[in-house]
Image (tube, rainbow, N blue to C red; front, top):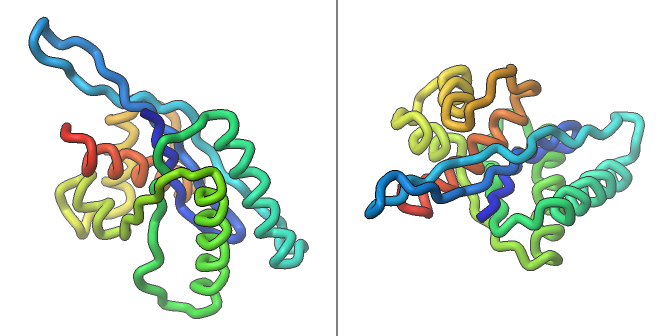
Length: 167
């Protein structure tokens, strides 16, 4: 099973794909393992109009989906905002992402940042750095995950796997 994690944004949308693999631990028990398939971000230029930025997110996301055929799309939900100016563009990007998933008939799961932190670190108030360290360890990634949207997207994908697939 392949899970596509998304951290939505108009300027930068982070994405991360993980695969859940089964490997025999013993003759009787299987040990599930995560494999990081790909991660990165979709970046749009501030010089583009809002419709053009959303179109780029849609087009790039379609290519990622076509390349990897994910079974689930897990996305960070906007549950709290400090600034309405940033909340509206993030909501627009989220809408485009949800439409893209619906057109491809990919089920969508939503996770708040608090849920992700709680599931990944067992501490809903964990700092970003703690979540990133845990994700790098789980997925056996050596390099830094930059920008933060990429690490967040991978954390969302792992969160989906841990929450829904009995590990």
